Image (tube, rainbow, N blue to C red; front, side, top):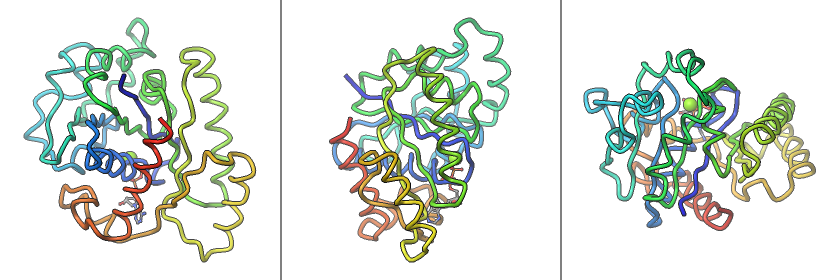
Length: 253
Ligand SMILES: Nc1ncnc2c1ncn2[C@@H]1O[C@H](COP(=O)(O)OP(=O)(O)O)[C@@H](O)[C@H]1O
Ligand SMILES: [Mg+2]
């Protein structure tokens, strides 16, 4: 059975999209069949794997509200083993529209039911809120990965997130697991970083992925070329780091 994993953090700009795209592409490069699901109206995951607006006939929005069959929204990317359910700005209205639907928390689960087992991994990129779209993603997921920066408020944000996740688990998805915490934009030379990592280790122990993702200009450049880092600069340090995360992920779920 395929695993569904959400990349979640209610904070924006922490590396959710970058990590979802690159972990997905690295899993695919390692021979796994992967479906990316772009659940952010900004559509950065979609453009990040080289899919332009013109290529999108129907999107995750249509599949979520049941206006299109999920299979019909899947686009095959030019990268080996990697497909995507794209997002467009129309998804911005979904948060409101989902409110009116029955089982409004389970729309993504329903959407993925017919396709998830065609893939080894389904990777969902969440928006930077804990609204209905993120709740939908977590209800549909077996695991979640929390990308985070080693900032002063990161730990506070993390405990808030874990409280919400606990509620979602209790109400809708008791099987949801924390697959791992992924450190992004890491700079080991900063004292603050060392302190935050020590705290994280204390509370979350081996949930922390062994390899952090360091800061790299290449990682921020790659989406502009519509390429995951393992294609944009295959032997660079960021590609190696994300390949290592993919490997560790495969051992975890
Ligand atoms: N390791 C990194 N090094 C440098 N820039 C990064 C790194 N990870 C992400 N970024 C950049 O930081 C910004 C926010 O990242 P993004 O993945 O979009 O975060 P989120 O999806 O959580 O909002 C983007 O411009 C992205 O290119
Ligand atoms: Mg994002």
